[in-house]
Image (tube, rainbow, N blue to C red; front, side, top):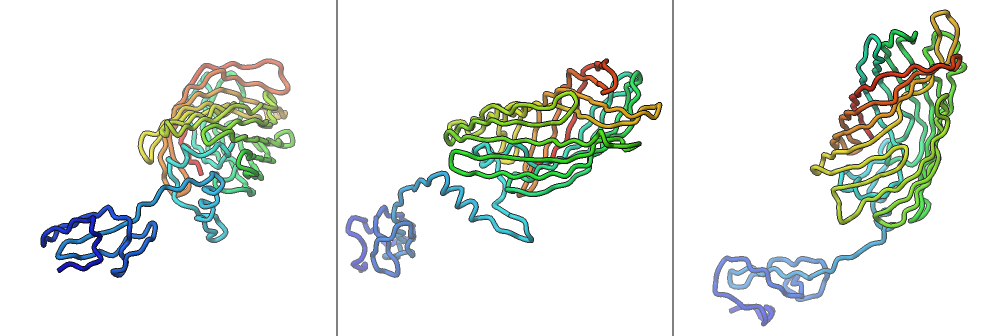
Length: 344
């Protein structure tokens, strides 16, 4: 009563409506046995029992450059913008270190009043989004100052910046990240000529393996206190520990711990402050520099297909103020800072 095409090694049960997954290596399509890897046949009915025959397929491993090519092919250019697959922390935790600086928008608050120096900033750099290979960007930053009473400082500082950045992976073992910015940093109460600066960076990455990258380069700050910083370190993102990532690269170290699919905790450190051209109370011009060091803990979540959004809380130390026309420095007490950061 059953068709002859049923393989003899598969037992034919009595009339029933149960579904049986037969471990056969032939695929039955339209009632004709054939071999076709990865194809699932139509349901084959035999006396009320449904048999589904599939072909077992061995996993295929692709080289890293082939994986990157497939990912690139999944992107589209829409209205001049490169749109790719949705952002995921799984991919961010495992990817090679090939981005030194990426686009971000920051709102930061460091409380202070009287003899304590307070600082509130709305800022965004000229770096391009991490998925973009090159481009120009311009931005405007605002800094609101309060105190300290023993130093005459303007209540507001401004940054106008125009920057160009490019990054690329030239081989499976090498990539680079280059950026150049032209900026005017001043209170704009008088001439801002001494507030023109040209910060830039040039960083190379050597991809030793899928889990280890070495990073070396320079970060030119063009500040009165610190002109140049070396960029050196390594990034370790082991496949054995997918929930952890260590980007131990000076001067921008960071350690990530994945809490959930869309949430991660991290620790980082940064150099704060800058150099601005200002007008003093006696209407003379001077150049003012503020510097601090910040150790931060943050928590962030994916907020779109392109970026992340998070809060950072940190301890600020080694704070001081200096002027180009005076040899003395003003040292300030430690403080804490709260930052809201959106990264792209």
